[in-house]
Image (cartoon, rainbow, N blue to C red):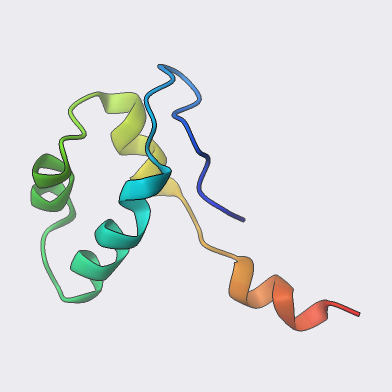
Length: 64
C-alpha cells in the first residue's frame, strides 16, 4: 500500500525519497540511475523501491 518509513532490513529512512523516485521514473529515466542519484546503495533499499506496488489509488475507491 504505502512505502515503509524505513527499510525493513537495514533501518535506513527511505519514505521521503519515494515521491522523487516515482516522479523521475515516470519521466522515463532509468531506475538504476535514479536510485544511485538518491543515494540508495544497499540492495535491500533498492529492492524495496523496485518491487513496491503503490495500491493506495486503487484501494481508496472502496472506502465507505
